[in-house]
Length: 427
Ligand code: EPZ
Image (tube, rainbow, N blue to C red):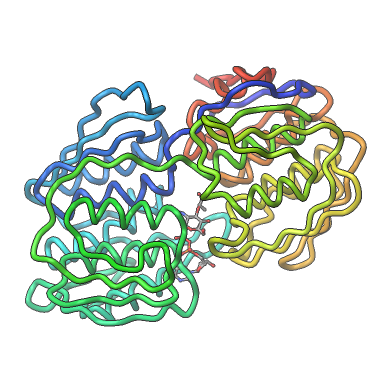
């Protein structure tokens, strides 16, 4: 397994290109299943999860062709076309490796009137149930059966009727599956307390470009009037707001000055406010967002929440940044039940962090010491990179396959702004 080795102490200075958003790409790719015409996605990030999703689409009979990239994009262009579906089954061996595979459930049900998808199971950060996905689909008329680890969904008469569903808990994935199921229903579907993440706005905008009728985009109430068919489209994946926020934390902890090229400040209010609370200079530029810091970070008090609140996907990275700050910072993780896996690893580097249930208190220390550490999940592994960039000496991050799921060309991007970082391939 590859390792990433960092010799800390370099201030990051320069421009970091921000790739297309992983969590937008993973909900845009399944949209190709909703039509027999080609869907072309631009600015698609080069990530393990994107490749994995392409493989899943191929298994279902959807062709995927990479067409290079355009100069104004950092990502690739991929055209996906499901002229006819050859399968409506998402098998366990694929779903268990990438839980976002569950996002083929809604589109398969809409296009083919049936779907058999393995239950994704839990992961490091929580047990990640999909009950809300299933309840929303049932509200639209789907019949759902759970058998030997699989969800078997069908639409009576081959087409969902429509209906109304209020989410008791905001769920990004369940909102995405429900929207993709609703666009081809015979009637109108209404979702209340829907997730409002920018990635869902991207999904809705892409579906509208394909001919869907969706009102309330960006709000917590989505009204989808079903249509008989969708057509192909070309759509550009939004910039990755979590990648941008992650590199912003790296700039602050190294007391650097970076420009996040392609980042969209309008989608990052809570993250930018947290950076300013930590004492960083944050300003919009023509090309993106500039983040600069001199001195140690001020203490922050951050509680994760659904968008537009402070993103749970930014918690581990801000915690790493706070470890070298002044005073005590307080974090509350309200979304996932086990999203502090980075804490024991950060402690190996000399961080002072105390976890009590859903809250963590981080007391800033004068310095961190590089150490061998273990990545456990995507954002936890980024927090270890961030700490390593500012630690004294060498940090070895193991199990970097977690990182490769969500951070495109991480070492290249950090080397380009002065980090002493390299990947050691284990062959
Ligand atoms: C998406 O996961 C993201 N993944 C996650 O990013 C992100 O952390 C999460 O949204 C929250 O923003 C992708 O977009 C591929 P949820 P998702 O459904 O959809 C509970 C990353 O690091 N819940 O919004 O799985 C759930 O247990 C990843 O990029 C149910 O109870 O998250 C959690 O407590 C990690 N029943 C809460 O809702 C359900 O049916 C929010 O989960 C679904 C969810």
